[in-house]
Image 1 (cartoon, rainbow, N blue to C red):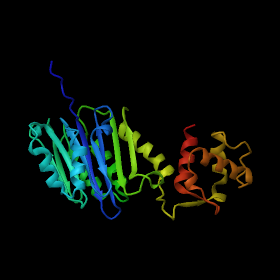
Image 2: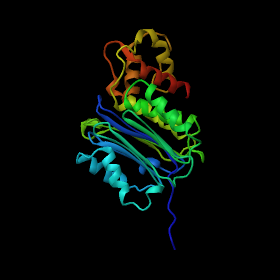
Image 3: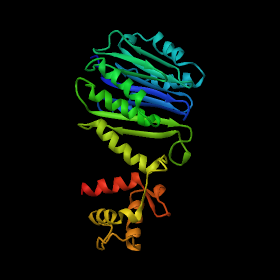
Length: 294
């Protein structure tokens, strides 16, 4: 009995930021745990998305070929040259130099296609239409910030443009940077997955916000708030969350500072702690939002 192949109905974006030294992939699909299958990346080597009637080996094989110095186009040609199912495959590659190559086989389910821009490719199959990848490309090109911000914006834009016409289920993002992972031990600067959720891209963005606060150090130096100016709001929030037991006085006393410190430590925000009488705006807004949802 012949086993049926699973079809990765997916939209993704593969890109590089050579100035920062970042390579990454963002992807969403009506498929369980798309992040376990489609995106592949290695710092200073490149990034790959393999989808449609996916040959998952394109990921590790492609990265190995890129690590030898082959360009994205050369790697793509090698991957599909002897693949009898190449017309059912879809793949996007960005290499160590930011060069891009993509393939959408003629047998990929409609709508299927890709858009190539400088250092990126947006691609997808079984989409609402070409507007999905076109919207992704525009969002990527116009969004400010790091590669991770541009990839998330592109994914969200593709979703708003109709995304996968069969629905939503999972999403993922990976961005690699040399020694960019926890403690500098790996290249996994950002590595997040939402495996099964009714709104996977929204959930991915929510999780990334916490990842950003917990593990990344990229705050805007001007985005700081004087603790004395928001002491009452901090006391109210910490009281709702069970960290502060005193009265809401608006005075920045030692009890308030200890409660704030405990909240930050318990939530793994020690890398965002300050001792100059200010709080990062990102941390303050997260605290207030969390308390409002309590």
